[in-house]
Length: 148
Image 1: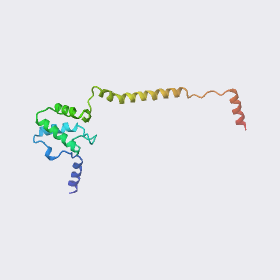
Image 2: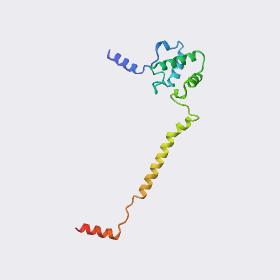
Image 3: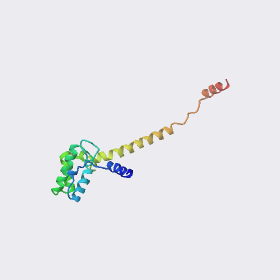
Image 4: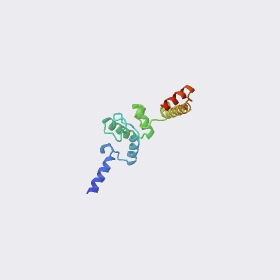
């Protein structure tokens, strides 16, 4: 009995928001719909896919994806249709072309620039860290202080 309850708790964590009425009869189409839905962002929940989100808009998008698949669209055509309608923000994994290349390259470039600047600063600091020699007057004053 405890094992059964534990199993139900573990499986509940992996449950998705797809309602039974949304599921397609054709397992192949349903599998394709799930794969597409996992790559589309819920516009309300931000970082959840429409497959995981309980939002009404996510449900509408899941139904739209399934409708397009039933109508015979390919996976790429379905994604292109949704992107055309809602913008590229709807993609959980944005494309790596055009202006997005700047965004993809910005983080590594800034990291390398920061590491380079830190390295240059450390080298300069190490070179100038050596103590200057005491003048004759400073040595005499030091000797005087130590004798007291």
